[in-house]
Length: 96
Image (cartoon, rainbow, N blue to C red; front, side, top):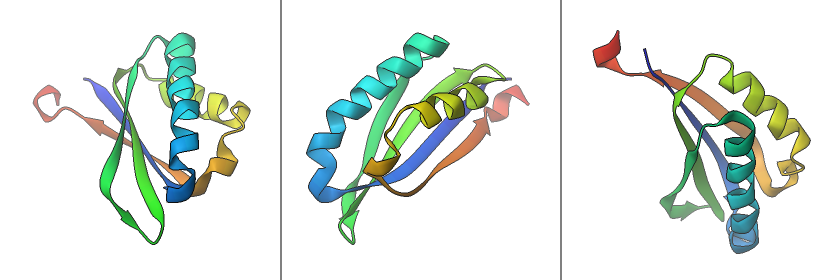
């Protein structure tokens, strides 16, 4: 069964250009630490001055989310987001 992890959060629009290189580095850090490369996306619209960004990690191992949470606590990126990061797991239906 393949697990997929989706992590979404909000970035203040006026800080998005400055946050983007930090998130590219964050994604590199995750890949280096876990061997799992991710994809960074965002919703095309902005709401109330906030952009919604999403990290996607496919085919993650069972302990990936715990490792990701530990890396996040060490990242010093928390001040760049508005609210909390939401982490959701999905599995392939054809693998159930």
